[in-house]
Image (cartoon, helix red, strand yellow):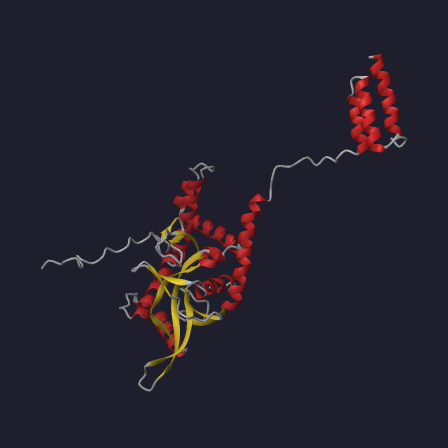
Length: 358
């Protein structure tokens, strides 16, 4: 049997814009979805503007050292490259980072840590969408704890509200939030009944939180988004009425520091404070942009000449008695008769004699 294409009389769909290019989202303005898409900075890039990079940079240094220790071939390779070849050196550094992450999770290749976290994220999506879960059995206890934590806190994922792309026009940003969570009460027949409260929900798989600064800003931006982009219809739809005060994070690390390696902890995040921090970050970004003009070639800092010094220069540069007469007339006009500084009178008399002699 031949499968026919769609309705041949249907109007052709609008071409879908290329959403991500050069690390940015390309989307049209909310008030004119048919306009040419423009670049939007990623939400995650925005929130890192004023991050404390000291701890992170030291961690990166340690990871590169560990990676080179795990991969002697990379160390040997590093001894062959030109140290001024930034691309070659960077590639070895990236591969050393991958080797360090892979070694920590007992793997021999690939970005072990990153990819495992991404996989756990995807498995929770399968759960929340009601799809078959394809996780290995070793992750089953962690996923079960995730489900239990959500149910115990009367939370559920709102259908159709997973991995949605939003724009925040105030800051020219775009990003993709994990999901929208709804609260409910359980009825007698064990079915949830929506209570009306909606929250931005997020899943985090990193081992530990050093600060909630970036997370609170990230979730605040999602909660204050102007609209949701529908990629299938190439148009914007309304942002769901989520709380702008609180968001919810499910912490499900791959390796847990506590006694229960499969523990899943829910946190409430103060995104009202996060939104205030976003205003600060935007100020920093604008000042950073303006700061490009804060340096310029140095202008002469020489002290300006006094009136006496200026007329002394004119007297010294005079080449004739006619020139000296002109300067004297200018001094009388400027200082007044009888009030010309004595040093100028003495210099003028001296120059008169010198000019006559020459």
